[in-house]
Image (cartoon, rainbow, N blue to C red; front, side, top):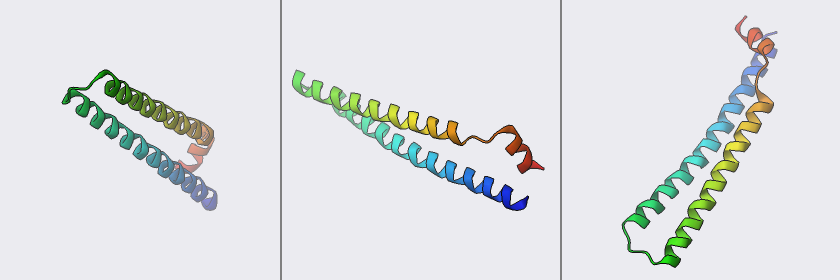
Length: 90
């Protein structure tokens, strides 16, 4: 039984590490979006420049959405059942 608990806990630790990695990637993309917004707000951009920045921001938003979907799908496939949670506690 202790081996089973240890395996479950190790699996959960790996899940947490993976989620943290994805959150780090999301954070970097958000920082990039913020930098683009600051740049755009402090410059006199022509239409072409503004369009390119908006395309870049849209691309980053899409990448963030994909990372979030990946994280949710991974979590859904690796969530502990209530029975497994009870075994860890007892």
